[in-house]
Every structure is written in C-alpha cells, then in structure tokens.
Length: 227
View 1 (cartoon, helix red, strand yellow):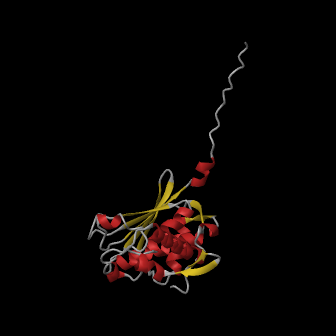
View 2: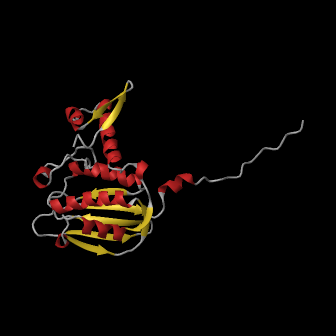
C-alpha cells in the first residue's frame, strides 16, 4: 500500500513520502501533528485515486443505473447476495466514478458482514428533498460506542477482523467523497446482533447553490438634515 499511496510532504524545499508506517507509529497519539499527518495521508489516497474534490466531474445520472452498474461490474456481487427494491428513477448530478467507489465500499461491507445465506437489502427511495439509498446487512451489528467512531480514520470494530481485512479507512474515504459531491452518509444499528443500515443521501438541490444565494434587502439611506 505504501508504494501505491502516500503523500509527498514539503519540508524545507524537499519532499518525503508520507505512508501508512508513519501513521501506525503515531496512530495512538491525539496531538495536532498526528492529526495533520492522518489528514495528509487521506488526502493522498483520494488524490492518487482521482477521488478528491479536484477530480469531481458531475454529470446527470440515475442512481438506479449507477447501482446496477456496480452490481454488474463487481465480480464479488452475485445476484443472490442482494435483494433490491428500487422505487424511483430520479436523476442527480454527481461524479459517477466517485459514487461507484463509495457503493463498492459499502456493498462489500454489507456482503462481508451478512452471515450465512441471508441477503443484504438495498432500497432506493425519494422524499421531498433527496434520494435515499439504504443498504441493510444481516450481520453482527454495531454497538453505540462503535457507531460514534465509525467514520474515524483507522477505526475498526471489535469483531471486524473476523469478517473482512482492512485498515479502517473505507468509510472515512467514502464520507469525504460524498461530501465533495454534496451528499452524505449515515450509519445506524440497533446494537449487536441486529445488523447495520447505511444511508446514502443525495439532495436534489446542489448545496453549493445555497451559499451562492444572497438575500438583497433595500438599504435605507437617511435623508440629509438641514441646519
């Protein structure tokens, strides 16, 4: 992983590679320098994978079509593994390749954590303000203490290693990518033994437009007072 990912950190005119060993050596520290190093490492992963905000190329696409492509293209996803419920064919403006990355991360997690022959369930619905894609697995679930840390870099649940290999960055990267596409991700679970639900929310209105709207009010200029 170090050879593929890493960031060149400028230091006195020279560059050095920032890799996962640097993070591992400081991962138990909470000082500012460590947090900066972690953020640099995450930025480098996104940049190297063309997943950073600089590479966002929005196009109008159906979420249902993106989902279908992911399920078809990824050899890990066999038809019996997922039950799909598509209730809308709305289009949104997103970077398709970036959203595909997120869906692959979330769906692979659901597949790994769903036990036995049970199916993970995928639903796509709409409300007044957004499209909501939900992925519910039938796995071990998440306790309340873990759910508060689920998006933190390098966090892994107590039993995660039993189900899937990794270093705990999939959801961290996914959250950052969706933020760059004006979308968000939430994770819910009723606790151990009750499975986990992941919600990916795509607002219909580009959030950036909200900051561009300036409310113009009439300015009252006081009249000159004659002496």
